[in-house]
Image 1 (cartoon, rainbow, N blue to C red):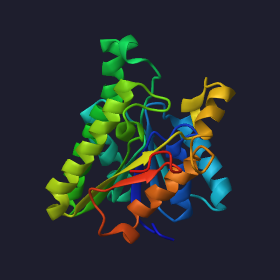
Image 2: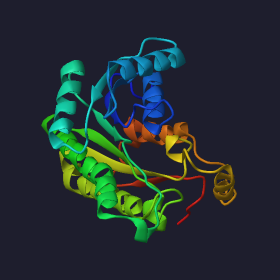
Image 3: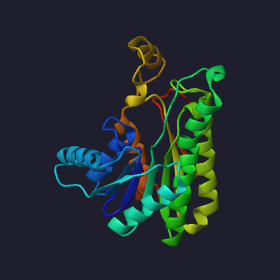
Image 4: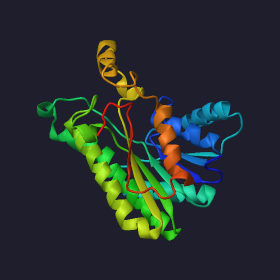
Length: 256
C-alpha cells in the first residue's frame, strides 16, 4: 500500500473514462484518502465514483467529492480547505483537469485561446498556489501536474497550438515551483502523456486513430491507468528525491 493514510486531491476526476478517475481508483487501491474535484462534481457524480471505486477495490474507499472551478483561485483555496477539514491535511495534489481543442493555428480565435489557457495553465497556477500555501504551512507536500507530449513536440496528436502552448506553460510552471519551494519540503513534477483513450478522443475517426497508433513504437494508445501508474509513483515515497522532473508516458511516440 504505497499511499496508506496519504490525503490526495485529484482534479479532473468526474468522468469514469478519464485519467483523473483512473488515478483516484488506483490511489484508493493503495489506501489513500482521496478527494475528487471537478467543475462537474455534485452529489450524484461523487456517488457514482464512490460506487465504481468501491466495487473495484473491494472495500469502502475514503473518498470526498468537491465541485471546483480551477479558473478561480478562491475555488482552489476552498478545495484545499474542504479536503483538510474532511481529512485533517493534504499531502498531494494530482492535477489532471484539462480541455483540448483540435484546431489549425489560423482557425484559433482569441476566445478559443483564452478558454484553453485559462483552464490548462491558469488552472494549474491557481491549484499550484493553493497547494503551495497549504504545503508550506504543513512543512511539505507534493504536486503532480499532467501536461502533454504536445508541449514537447510542438503541437498535439489531438490538440492545437493553443493546447500545446498551455501544456508547455504547465511544464515550466511546475519546474519553477520545484526550484523555489524545494527548500520548504515541496516537490513538484510533471507527466507528459501522449494520445490516451479518454473522452478527449470522442469524434476522432477510426482511420485517424489507427494512423496515429501505427506510428507509436508500442503500437497502441495509452490507457488512463498507464498515466495513473506514473502519478502513483510520483505521489509515493518511492520518488522522494525526484522533483522538477518531466516523466514521459507515451509508448515511445516522442523519444528525446
